[in-house]
Image (tube, rainbow, N blue to C red):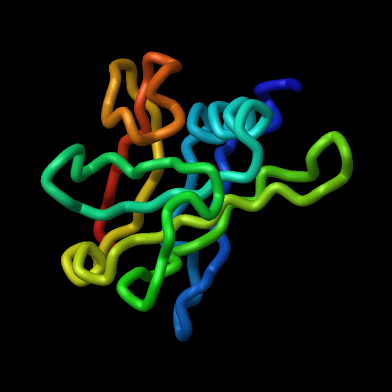
Length: 137
């Protein structure tokens, strides 16, 4: 796969009622990493809890491994394009309602930095971790 496919990153879909622009996006390096991780782990999802450990790091899990509820907000979905078998590859990005109360005025970019974050996220063995970069909207 050519990495230039993700040269502009990927904007998340708009999932919140009344909003007109995406809340989340993937930096190009994050999109490329998700592409590789999908090949290794299958369907994926993000969850941003804002808890005490790695609070600025979204956790990436195999889809369904982290159970979401009314205590979570779906901020967007990233379309990685079709799998070689033709199946869609969509990665939802969830955030806890409590964290969203603090970050509701921000646009989030999922980026990748060197180093290990939490061992719960699927990228941990890669020697990198996902990181949130935010800006006010």
